[in-house]
Image (cartoon, rainbow, N blue to C red; front, top):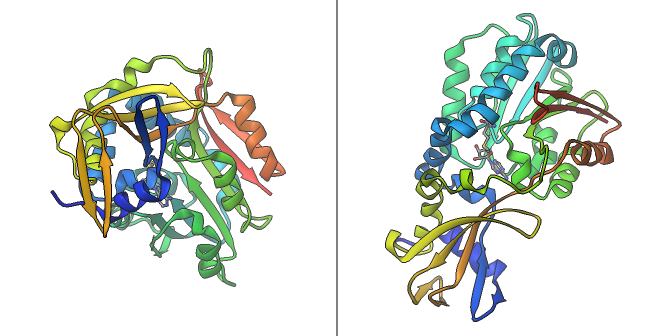
Length: 312
Ligand SMILES: C[S@@+](CC[C@H](N)C(=O)[O-])C[C@H]1O[C@@H](n2cnc3c(N)ncnc32)[C@H](O)[C@@H]1O
């Protein structure tokens, strides 16, 4: 089986912690979830999963449409870069471009670690053929490099930047670290727009919905990238370490030799592949207000999702 260098390097770099008689390995980095076209397609399959479709996907679209007037007020300027961090297939950018004024001059800048997604987002925005899209400038890179991206796209014609971080991407990262990276290069006129689910009631509930087979269909490609077969691992989800974790338990002993390194896995060892943080509204507000002077939360009716508009 072909081992993926990037996933293997992550495993070796992060190492393991001891858990009873076994090891717990951690390769949870949401960048890895989209590393190959199979992984990227795994994410797109989420759209067919009703809890995600209703709570995240459809809710975000509704919020964009419902607050169209507000977004026009915040975004519209003579000319601006629409920097779509973690652009996915570009459906959210499409929704934004549709509600913005036909008179604005938008340069669409999709940013993603996945070429597969960049291509999809560009094709989608090109197909739109909207007169307010004046250009497209993609970046195949980590969105934590926003500093460099803005350094390239800010010029006398496109001084302002409207930055999208939609689809709950933020909650798969350490929030303070990410907000620090994203706020630092912004100027007063720039705006960061973040869409994420908000916890109401008990923080850690409904584990069952994270055990759907769809998550295995997606994340199995991460452990396959480490040299395991389907029948050598078993997925589960749990709340641990203050977050939701998806992990595989190994059902066999296995030795992997790759890049001049040998890693010995034992039956019962676990590999954490994915995480998501869950925060309440007041906690999200506190995070944003640490980095931005002006924060507005546009909430959905049941207050379980919000789009935050953040300015320095
Ligand atoms: C949860 S999806 C959201 C996609 C889209 N924004 C939406 O709302 O449907 C996360 C996206 O961010 C990308 N991504 C995740 N981490 C990234 C990183 N560090 N740098 C660049 N892209 C990243 C993924 O490839 C994926 O397209």
